[in-house]
Image (cartoon, rainbow, N blue to C red):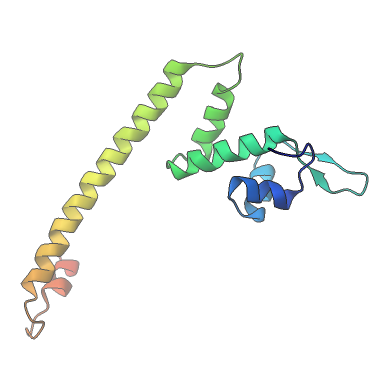
Length: 134
């Protein structure tokens, strides 16, 4: 599937991320430093692509950088702790549930406020009034 030596461009493309994203993850230590060619170019192994896909998918699921660091550490064969990963996932799920509840309340409030506007010809705008209330 992958050649042994991937350029940064091919690595980024294979994981569906921007080239600058790869550099950023290297700078902050999420991605291990790649080998360098004699000309000084980065040379990535298939393991780099696997790590990058792991990071990208974790970000898609809403995990923050610190959580991803912990997940990477917990993914090491000698360290794997399914219970700790489960607890992290449960905490994240609880956070998502709370955000969804907040968004549903916001949706209901905005829906009602927009309905209160009627044809939009009122002297006092219900949306402006709602935004001004505490």
